[in-house]
Amino acid sequence: MKGRLLDDSIKVEATLLHEHVCQALADPKRIIILYLLGDAPRNVTEIAEALDSPQSTVSRHLKILRERSLVKTERDGQQVVYSLADARITQALDLMREMMLSNLREQGRLAQAMGANGKDAGAPDDARRAGDPALARSKPRPHRI
Image (cartoon, rainbow, N blue to C red; front, top):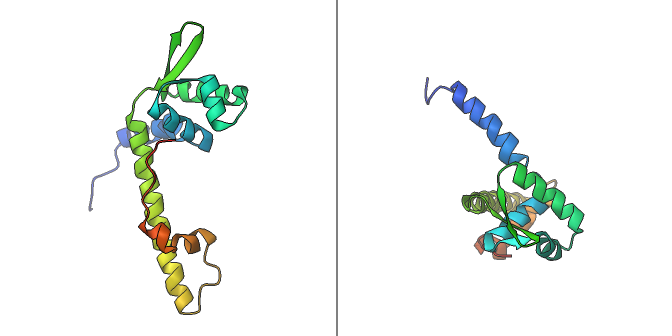
């Protein structure tokens, strides 16, 4: 048998990864919050303004991120300031974005090839857009917001 056997520790770690990280990343606003906090610690009002979202919604997202240990808090007088618990989360997000863009570019190349052969019917819109030469040259923007 090629490769290593799937042992119980990997199964446990995969479950924990899903529960603690993947579920926290399930909402795009929480991903944006992580990028915002990667730039600088912020209070809930600053985050709400940056997201153009109600403070109550942002507080709910921050609660989830805090429960999953992705953000930490520090009291500054009467304000609570949020920051990343581990800066590597934005590196992991950047890596996933690079993978996504790479996949979209490949889909775009396939869609263009199919279109050249008169077979592009049914190609996903994202794949067609990914075939755009400007997008093909682009890299994910830095995580600065």
